[in-house]
Length: 162
Image (cartoon, rainbow, N blue to C red):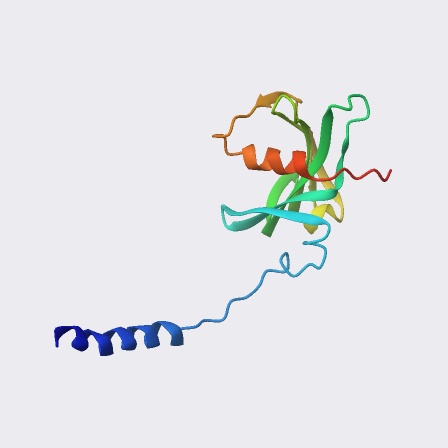
């Protein structure tokens, strides 16, 4: 008899949970029709007051022009809302960073290249800032946070269009 008294309580709690449905607004970043076909979603996180969406640009995956053992590709990080940057003594707002990466899939190494800040999402709009980061190699093992990023970049098909 004791078990039967919990049944109405259980049904009541399921009813309360299922009726508490709130409307969720979808970010314009997620509504872009190019996301599944051109941009591979990698990560969603927060950076200060902004929500960041990280993608790999599928069209940028190709072999390095001087070393065919190295792949190069672009990572795109979109910020919603945008971030502020001081360039030429002016404060400007950027909404995306495009970073060039280099991977050696045989040696499990990842190198970071040039970083570009753009006014609009997905590396579009006016180029606001460029940072030439030194291309130092980082050796990855399976326990590093960037390993999945590296592994996916090595498994993506090459874009041979020039």
